Length: 170
Image (tube, rainbow, N blue to C red; front, side, top):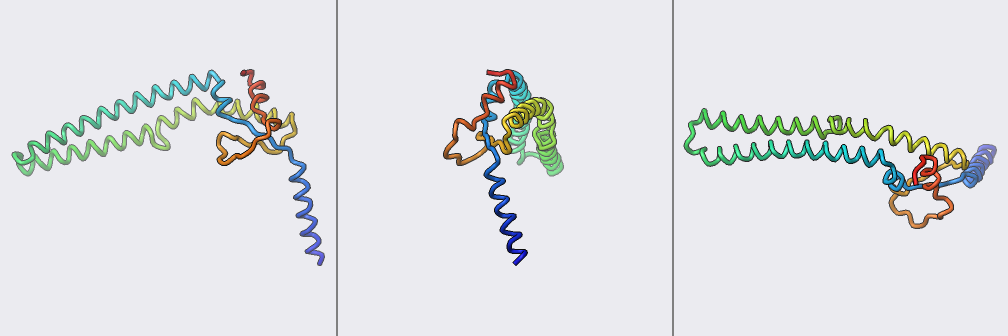
């Protein structure tokens, strides 16, 4: 009986403490869109990605050209030459995949550059969110940019403009 009453007390305390929490939401994409440093970082990343993709595409086309040439000459080649060309093409394809992984893989140079450029921006936004949340006494802040299925948002709970003000953005 004592255990049952304790459980009931804990459940009731949890319900009352949840109701006492203040909530807010914001849209991080709206904030990012108004940050010049985000726009600059995004442009820089786009240029890096395009340059690397173009380089990889050039290499892909070179391999395809060698493969087509090999296919057209295959019947006239000796077994040794045929095997050497096949090995060359296979090696080039493997090297291309390795290079692609080194650039665009999870630990690739592009991922590292993205982190290098975006982390300070994310930290600045997080600082502003923390400040506004503390100032308003919010216990939880949701990002409507990443939440699926939000059916209603009370505009009084939107802290996006306050965060923008804290970041000196409008």
